[in-house]
Amino acid sequence: MSQTTVENPKPISATAPAVVARPSTATGSTTERKGLTKKEIAADHPTWCPGCGDFSVLALYFKLIEKRKLHHEKITTVAGIGCSSRFPYFVQAHGAHYIHGRALPFASGISLSRPDLHVFAFGGDGDAFSIGGNHFNHTARKNIKMTYVVMDNWVYGLTKKQTSPTSPLGFKSKTDQWGAVDYPINPMKQAISAGATFVARTTHTNPNHVLQMMEAAMDHDGFSFIECLSECVEFYEGAFDASNPRKGGVFNLVPGSHDVTDEDAAYKLAGEPFPGHFGIFYKVARATKNAKEAEIIQNFRGKVTGLKDWQILQKNFDRMK
Ligand SMILES: Cc1ncc(C[n+]2csc(CCOP(=O)(O)OP(=O)(O)O)c2C)c(N)n1
Ligand code: SF4
Ligand SMILES: [Mg+2]
Image 1 (tube, rainbow, N blue to C red):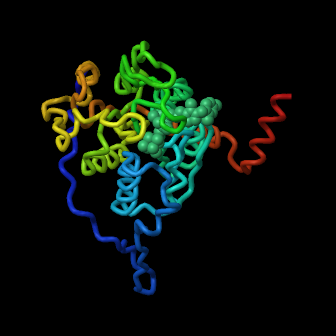
Image 2 (spheres, rainbow, N blue to C red; image 1 turned 60 degrees about the vertical axis):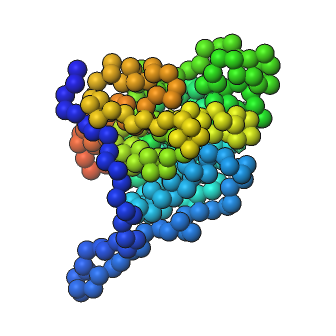
């Protein structure tokens, strides 16, 4: 099963300088385009509760944009509904705060029609695995190029404490006053089994690691999924203490010997009891839907040379009569 071993990334180096040198012009002068600064990319002040883990994820997204010198026309930020899904409001860039559970179909449309930019989707455990569960599975199996960060807080935060699909058994909430009785979803297993080609796990309490995972996910040619633990201090305080060394927990990286192309080994990691390991569990190369569709379009265009796009479309409609 294993082919070449793709390593979990090495620790990140210092942030690169913020000025991009562009190729010299014919006149010999150099056009410089500065990368976006945090100030330029930050929009409204986030309305999250003080101490919410989502702040950390947003800050690291800004850092990623700064570090990788992503310009406005090269990124878009999409989300569904939930506290975590407010994310695009706080980013001064193209994006959409879309329908509950429907971030991925919307993001898929952008990804398939705009291969020149990278789509980031953000959302919560409810948005991803309850109402959006079907879309998650299908986007993963189609391997549509984008990065999906699920800010998992094991609860519905926005609607004030209902049991979510990732809430552990026994969790007392407004919908399970005597404790949750339904077996929770394991996001990592779900992603691997659905066909995601990049599956990683991180936590908001380790900023360097979040950034590393976001960078690696963005560089992956396919559907890249990150489960990022993000504490809801209002309705599930202390949920992830066991993974936080500052709270007496342990943060263990995926062992260096782990082969990320080995699906069985990835399941094994995913099945470990909390807090488990953090890092890239699974990463394989498989043709994206983007590439397959582009090939179909190119082949078709080859057969109808000389026609404009609207004429090809007209021909298609005529044929359907
Ligand atoms: C169609 C629809 N159903 C239900 C809701 C109510 N609702 C809004 S957010 C949410 C759950 C959000 O939970 P999660 O995705 O975990 O986000 P969090 O707030 O925890 O970050 C629900 C049930 C809605 N807005 N739309
Ligand atoms: S309710 Fe929870 S998830 Fe929502 S902003 Fe507050 S701390 Fe964050
Ligand atoms: Mg949630």
